Image (tube, rainbow, N blue to C red; front, side):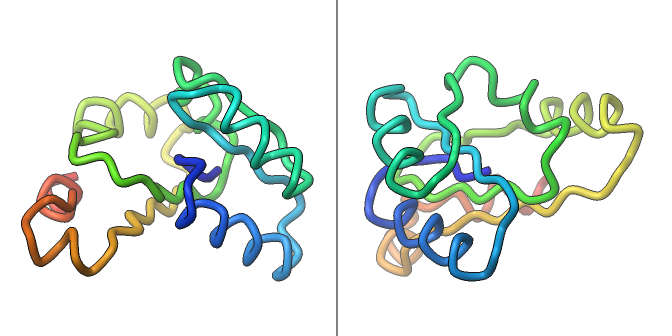
Length: 113
């Protein structure tokens, strides 16, 4: 699952396709943008409101957005892992280096999870 539909997310989708990912879900606050990227990448668009529900069945979640907001809280992840019966889930926060250096990245929030 790729969160975002901008340039970083598009790069992630292209790489996942190249590496043979069996299914790719694209999620964005704008469903139209998610649908556009999912269509171009052979994936499926997901409504933003269903993100935690859909995360129950995926193996990898890549956050590739420019949002300064935390996308997943510790409680979200705790509840998600209970629903997954503690099956492993790889969470990747793809923060641009410039965001990280400026403090706009989400790295600190992710470390607490």
